[in-house]
Image (cartoon, rainbow, N blue to C red; front, side):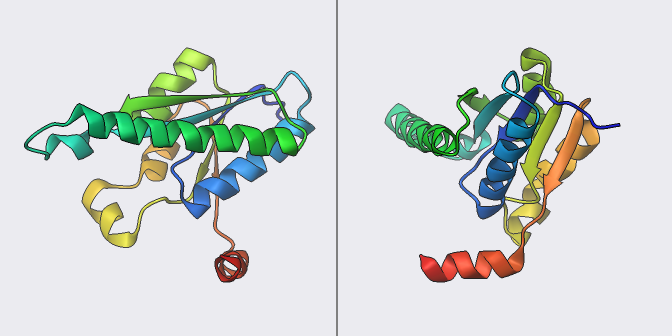
Amino acid sequence: MLQNYKNILVPVDGSYEAELAFKKAIDVAKRNGTDTKLHLVHVIDTRAFQNISSFDTAMVEQVSETAKKTMDGYVNEAQKAGFSNIDYTVEYGSPKVVIAKDLPKEKNIDLIMIGATGLNAVERILVGSVTEYVTRAATCDVLVVRTDLDNKAVLNKKK
């Protein structure tokens, strides 16, 4: 039996893997009908600011503004692809908890489409994989989008 998803959450962090998840989420949403909604989220990890001795609100505002511009770009890309039932939010806190628990409950999410990893190997060892946590802790379905290394190499050559 085919699952018909109506609220799809796509965490984006600027990584290639998140970009792939976003593009595949558009395709899934289009196949599921016009009442399917994509919810994009970018989570600003507040732990990154805890180590700054002179906490600068201008820095937080700059990071937030950059995230909003990036999210607007994703919305425009979805609209160009023929999908307009999309919204986004920029959240603050622990990406793991926001993605796996908070937003699914708040927005009645029935599918999370997430990139396999947005971190390099050292970062994964130090902070743990958000994707790993989401697959274990989320109460809805989770689809992990893996990187196609052949396509990534082609994409990097074009840049």
